Length: 312
Image 1 (tube, rainbow, N blue to C red):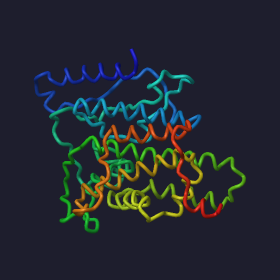
Image 2: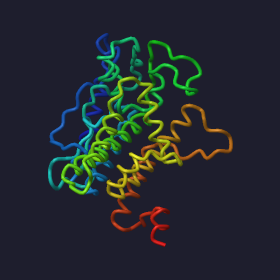
Image 3: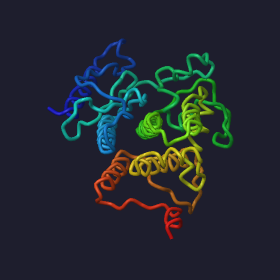
């Protein structure tokens, strides 16, 4: 029995258990999912292909959750992993765990109180996920008014509605974190990069993932996603040049999906403007498949126009 089948069976058991009548099951929540294999952080991939295969396995796991009308609700760098064994079976290169916040069908909305102490909020809203990896749409609900994204000031107590694309967007920020973290790890052994430049990259990375307020994180994520549309961020461009090319291109594709999703959820797409593709599991899987084809030489890797000009 492969891992996908085991996950499916365990989730079915949880769903059957959730149908037990009684006050104890008035607000059912899947609390634990046992796993038998050990893992490694996504940024400890051995080669570019292992990262892509592991990421694909995680997206497929999210897709199976969505097929059951469920959302994980806490996709983070700590809840995603590569399989530790050297030669895992095809399709089992990565996995998702820590399902304690997973919402079962028809469960009650989870609440978030913006008046809770910052020491509590810094670790993430209670049973709603982790702020640093949260989808922009949810961050905008949790924070006060941010520019023109919200028509009115948000209420103090929020009852967010999770969608499958929220999990996918969280995974995009996990990919962003993992690839940038790997750059920083590789730089430690790279004597060709000046220490001051290493410090700039390290400090910027810490800034991207150290904010504790939803509004600041939403603003940062919006700028990062918009960077693929003619608003480049110099430090981000530096990070991408130090990544594997297929990884950098995949990251750009995923950020593009995040930006279009943000335009939709904030109703900023005007009639006649390009709508872009919705963030779905199949679309994300197609982006990963394209990255694998580029890695294997089955699809050409785009060449930057600036590179072509410099070689002319």
